[in-house]
Length: 546
Image 1 (cartoon, one colour):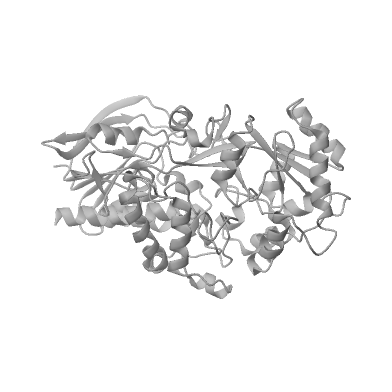
Image 2 (cartoon, one colour):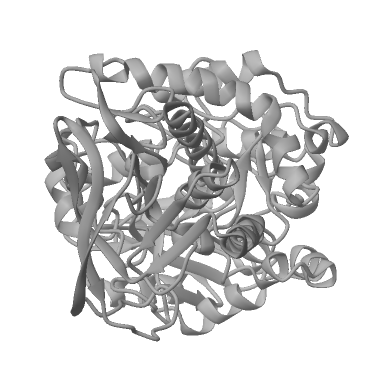
C-alpha cells in the first residue's frame, strides 16, 4: 500500500479533500497533471455565496436561509430521478452557507471585500430564478487569496510527512479489484515550465501505479473540450454556437469524468452546463480560444446581432442561461452591449483574478480609484486592444463600425429606434421600461449606488461621453453535472449503490451529488461547491478508514 488515500486533481476541491484527510494523520498522495496546484480557482474572481453574513447585515441586507432556499430551488428546477442526491446536497450546502462556512474560512485566514455583489438578479417571479438579495462575497485576494490557506496547509502537511504532492502525474485508470477502487495508474509527463494556464506538454516520460484504501477524484469538468460541450449541448438551449470561447484552460477536458465511468461510477446531468453569453476574446490569450467574461452592471442595452433589443427580463446580469437560450435561437453566434463610456466606467468589470489586480493584490487605494474613477486598467486595455470593443463619438459612426465586423447583419434603423426609445423613457420620472425601473430600484442598495450601477441617463447627446459597443460570444465555463455521489462523497454506481473506495468532489461531481445546482446556478456557488464537496468527501473517506 503506497498511501492511505489518493486524491486525483490539485484544484480547490482536491486541495480541501487532501489537506482535511492528511490533517487527520492519514498518508495522502495528491496527483496533479499540470505543473501548478490550484486549478481553475486560481483564475477565479473569488466570489462566494454566503447567507445572512456580517457583510450583508452591515449593508442592511436582510437575508435568511428560507429566502436562500427559495432562490436556490427556484433556480435549480430539479425535475429528474437523477436529482435525488443533488437536492440533498443543495439542502446541506445551504445550511453550510448560512452556518459554518464563513467561520471555517475565517479561521483559515480568508477575508472578504466589504461590499457584497448582486449577481444573477433574476427579474422574474419570487419563486423563479435569481438572487432576491446580494449574496456574492468577493474574497479579499480573489481566487489566489482563497487558495492561499490551503496551499499553506499543503506545505505544512508535506513537512510533517502526511502529504505528498506529485505534479505532472496524469491519472488514466482507476484500479478496481473485487468491486473496490484500490488505486490509480497513469503516466508521468515530462517537466514543462510553461506559465500557469498555458497548454502543457503531454509527452510521457514514465508510468506510475499507486495503491491506496480510497481514491478521491477531483478532476474538474469539460469546459475546455469544445467537442464535448457540443456533444452534450442540450436541445432545450437551441443549437450550439459555431464559434465559442473557452473560459477555462485546456486541461479542463472532461477526461476525469470518463475515467470514473470506466471504473463503474454513474455520470448524470452532463447536459446541464453553465456557460456565459458575455464572453469577449482575450487580447493576450493564455490558453486555447481564451475568452474573458464581462461582469456587466445592469444598464447596457443588450441587442441581438441585428440590433434588436432582448426582451425582459434578459438584461445584463439577470439570467445568464435564459439569455443564452434566447440568443441561440436568433440564428447568430454573437450579440451586442451598447452603452456610453460614463456608464462603462462605473459598471464594467472583468471576471478573473488576473483581470482584477486591485482586489487580487489587496490594494485598497486601487480598489477605491477603480470603483469611483474607472474604468480600471484591464478594462481600458480591452477598450484599446479588444477586437470586440468599438468606440465612437456618435451612433452613426458606431453602427458603421459594428457593421464592418459583420457586414450585412445589423439593421441600423432597428438599432437607432431601440436606443432613442430607451432614452425617451429617461426624460421623465416615470417609465414602462422594465430595465429602467430595475435600475432605479437597484440604486436603493448602497453597494450598487457606489460601485455598480450608474445613474440612469440618456446614451445619446454626449452627456455620458463617447458611445461603446461590445460584441459578445458564448464563453464556456462550468459543468453542472458529473459523477453522482452521496452526502459522504462516495461515487455511486448505475444501481445507486456506493462504489467501495471511490469518492468524488468539486466540478467532477457536479459540485456534489452529480448536480447540486440543477439547471441553473446563483453565482458564488462554484468555489463554494468545491469547498463543501471537498469537505464532505474528506469526512466520508476518514469515516471509511477509521
